[in-house]
Image (cartoon, rainbow, N blue to C red; front, side, top):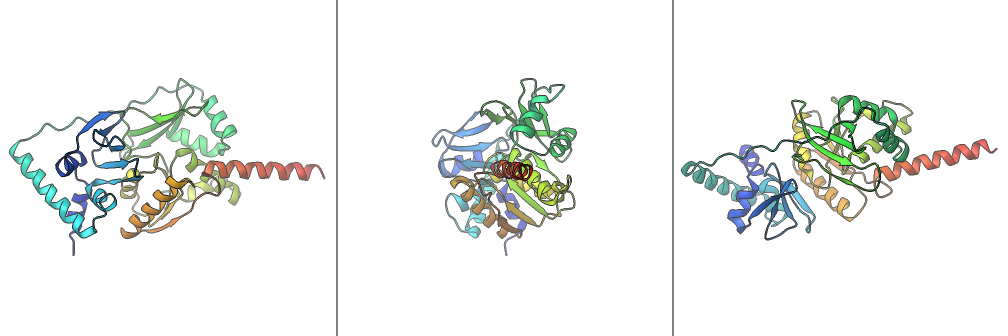
Length: 310
């Protein structure tokens, strides 16, 4: 039997050091992550543990995921390789102490006083339920910056903002704020729920909640389950959320209905099923859940017009 503490250590291996020793890879810090000089599509996030290899469509948390997903190594062998790597690192550090890297600070855009463009964009253009938007604004999880962009915020266990993504209200501008840590994703929490629905974006999570409200005919139906945005297709934010929400037993992967989303959902469902969670995939009918929400709204409008015309 494999010791769980060894597995935990293996999942928290420093990826920069691990890949440097294993393959001779070197990294340069650029745009909020570490980019591999030898393979530019391979990125390691600020936490130095989570990674995503864009050209392969593979991501994960720690060297254990890397060995299993990228190198197709059996689980037991991967744990052994990580244990050896950890021991080597410990010996190196004991002989030559290194100065710990200073944690990067999240830089949040300044808030605008009245979020008119936020409401117009989220409620009118995206069709999201106004009660959901107001609740998230009160929580500080969403706000409008001085340039009129929507900012979505993720918090750590102490309530401090640690991640933020920006979405332009005009055009298709989007991106993460400087110093963002993707371990702390935008979420819509339901403290006593045993279910977590996982999305690629905050807008899709909010759209899914809006569909729930419409289906159940209740302004609070969205509060019955947890929702989490990954800000992409890498599961970096899931471990922290699960650690903070011990009641969660089931993970529902609601990623985009495109090749990248389907592949990521299948990989995550297998991974967390092995880790003891109930898992299932619930892809949207359209490309994403916001598209589904807008389709639902259009159908409702057509029905109302048909009824009025009788």
